[in-house]
Length: 100
Image (cartoon, rainbow, N blue to C red; front, side, top):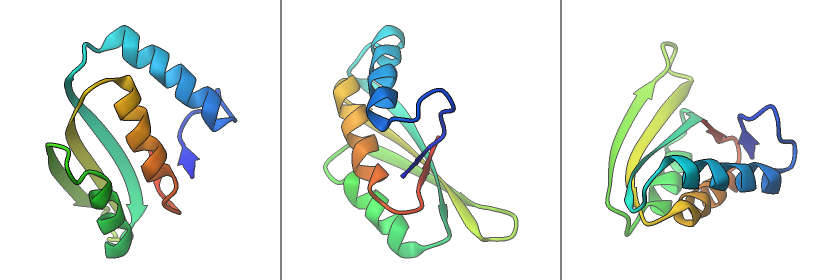
């Protein structure tokens, strides 16, 4: 799991900090934009999509210039900050995913 956050080495510290920021800056329920970067691998993309089953969402993907990576943008309707963090944790177990 890779989390692009230079201040927190511990994922649980990161998630606690993220929860505080989400609660301070968002009024839930609302749409939240999730961004990930993965190697151009259809299986990993399918794993990410599966996590969003049952959640109202829209997708937007873009390949890198050389086609090696895919930028995955998912705008999902979430209920609260815990819902956001739950999704990040589920995606975080997929090897090689960078969460932005």
